[in-house]
Length: 332
Image (cartoon, rainbow, N blue to C red; front, top):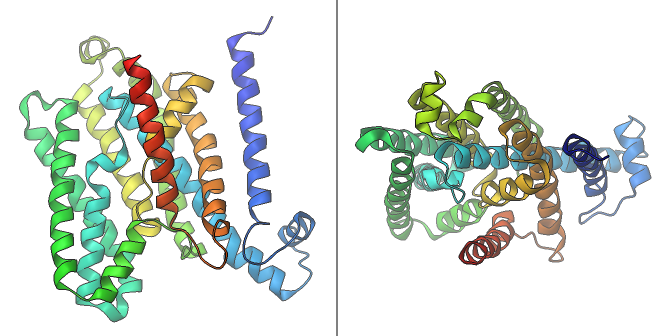
């Protein structure tokens, strides 16, 4: 007899296998052609020539790792936000993170255009953190500190920061406008191994912390009163989880730009396959989110010959279709 635990075990095994195959196959896609055998040789330290070594270790590996961590981080942030607020349509970017990061990047591009490439990730991170802090302050001061207050505050601050950015870009240099617009649409093209070394620890620590509190989050799904009756400090737990979502999203936006809707789509898909409890949901989001963004990045760098498509455009198209699908399904 096949039990639920057997099915979950099979799903985990399939997802891990798909992730490993996705990582290996994604090395072979790009402007320069190479074979899986050459990739395996290179990864085992036996590159055929200097070109293969540069291609694998310095160009494609950082990009694939960035896609892996970015997909996992955004998916987990979406899952945590949806469970914490009990809103199935909640998404990390509702915090105004992208708008805050965009404002930081815009200011740097206008003030120090010559060093914009160097300072942009730091300015974007600070902008994202400022937006999140404002959301926290407004959300906590709202009546009864309800979860919906944080989302409404995020939407309002997002519009405000976007308006300021648009005004600065309208008044500023047209070249800076083009640079910021491309960055806001999301791209993994400029991610280097040094960036991955910063992104990876943040993602691992945040996801590990969520897993430590998975039973508390399960209790929160039953409602605030039920969670409090079990001895859980709901406000403190909610603040901790929102802070983790903020750290995940701000770090990823700072280095990869705005990649939306991953946090909306992946948790919904994972719930159907792995289950709704937090531990299963988080593990599923890590695996499926990584696979998803690895292949979206492959599409971004191969769809148009001689030109790379911003990755955020693809996720936004897929996400908006998915969003409409959810709305129609709920109406039925």
